[in-house]
Length: 517
Image 1 (tube, one colour):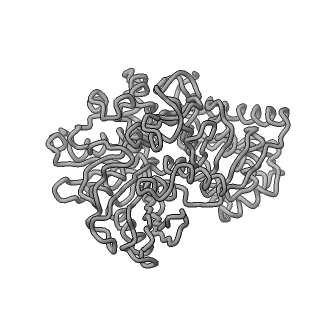
Image 2 (image 1 turned 90 degrees about the vertical axis):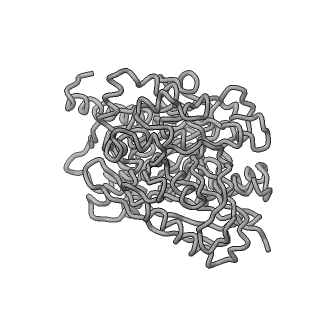
Image 3 (image 1 turned 45 degrees about the horizontal axis):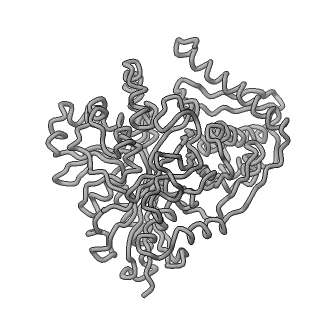
């Protein structure tokens, strides 16, 4: 029987499962929806048991289309930064999953910044102090369920990102993949392990965290994932954005992956000590990254850099990456769709057929992410009048996506190509807009399951089903290219108008918070 790889992509809104054959073709697919709740402003929660059930449902539905005995290994990609707290003895969650969008740690983040911890955290972890990352969520959960940290120190409680929760439930191994761990703000980039001083700062006992392992494990074998037979190995685990970069063969210098989703992730491999190129040790055990340069200021963990540092993946040696997280891109269009009483697809269609004129929308819902990291910024709609219609508003919303991405790209020098994925890439107008505004080639993937595909790619490498050269050829053959067609004057004028209105959004937010800085 032909060997197959089972890829599981556990996301915020659903879990997807794919079966991939030895030629890299998807031969079966299925998905299971997942709900999310917002019990109060700034809070985002999910049911961890429902999440686990969605994995079981997606896998079962997918394997109804093939013989489960043909599955030789599993690749897993997961939403990042979200946190689960569960009982070590029973395996039952003690609280709802706290989602990556959750802002409950904002006050604690501000306190730590006032106490002067910002630079230390950034230098150790590559990440700015922000409640998006897992550590503050972990501290908040423990404050409620283990305020003295006694059970956590005894190992009676377990805390983890979604990969750790699923691996513990499905294989019995309590481990955390290093790329996901690098998004917790508890991992020291230099050592690749939990940092004792950071654990103390954020109030998280080491005994409550899983052992950190490479992206290729060891993760153990599944024991309870019907209809798979027991003993199928988990061969690869990646954070979803990391998996998408891998699927684009994004280890090559000058390639920047942009995922246009609810928010957006902009990621490129980064130079690290001893870097010689290649995907972090896959074909070259000494490789730890690319020679394309890290972008931004200084080296990894430099607090002056406008983008984050992270570990993209590791197969024994880490591949580092520079990443920027933009909070509202696709969500801006769905917000406008809800406001206008139409569908998000209709907003995209309206934007494709219109010109925004002087209308600018700065979607600082909950502040601005990279490269500004300004939690005080407020949304701004400017340049409209009584003649402004829904077409101009739709176009301004679409342009806000391209402008936010372009602001990040300026911190990533050496860019030669954007590789684009995510739901918003269906907008050809956005792809052309991004190419023109950023003056760079945009390659839109023809596939829409990049996170699952990247997990399958890494798992298949472990099985010897393909090589990195095969993956590069596959990635280059499955894209549509958009080339820049704007004049330099047009680019400068568009960027100047955007930055003028963005400055207004930041100034208004500062004044509302009692500051004039």
